[in-house]
Length: 339
Image 1 (cartoon, rainbow, N blue to C red):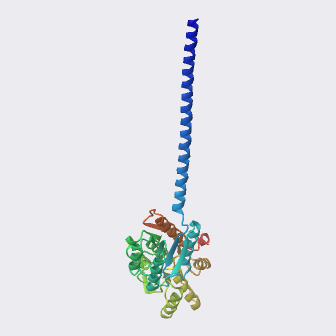
Image 2: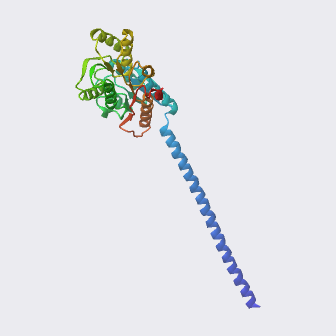
Image 3: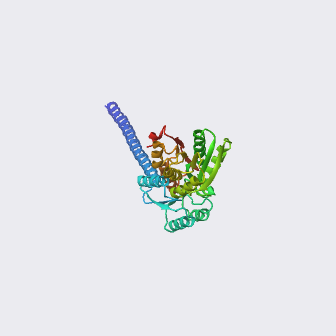
């Protein structure tokens, strides 16, 4: 009887021990499962926080940006401003376009006012590459993110980036195409942009480089119309009275080329006329055969990209030191692709 009782007690002890072991394993598994659930939840929350952080970095919500255009009186510069404003709307930022009217003092006062008003970032096309330096330094001291657009300033180290076309490349394409159309010989006149701006300097350098390869081409006149259509018209009217053998007029912008074209039309004269920027009126003239060519440089893209860059800078991100849009020759053969 004692033997049976002892066996029963041992069986109970072993059974209890086994059950206790099973209970312990179950508890540990439950604990592990709970830990995994907590870790998964924390990981998901971290991912969501990262996504929210990324969205915030790309957002311009509540920010104010200013884009300062040197002379905002032609279709090309207006397209740059429009591209900036449109991108601002996409990211929730307020973008204001300021027209420097080709006057250095006017632009300086505009920038100084925006520094005082606490704008979050500046996009600047300097009226004067040198003249903009002091006020750009003021912006830098105030900790305002800045990029230049269309044209550079004399000291690009003061700003984070340049967004625009490769003026030199575009101008080589324009002049070479014009002189090839001319047959490599003849007399031409050149209408320059505002003297001293980086655009004008780079374009002129490119023009001269190409002209060196064409000894039979003579430049009879060269004058600045400050990127303005009316000034180009008056200059061309004077040239047409002075010369009767100009074969081509090369404008450093479409606005000036269109001014030259209007003067020729009024005088009943036809000649090869080229410009750059591919603005709507120039495209229509190319299609109509009253203007030979232009260069598409992507104005709206310049504006959009410049605001994208300044917004990234305002959110603590880095950007490329320079961003160039594509230069494309536009003639009667492909003008329909750009309309």
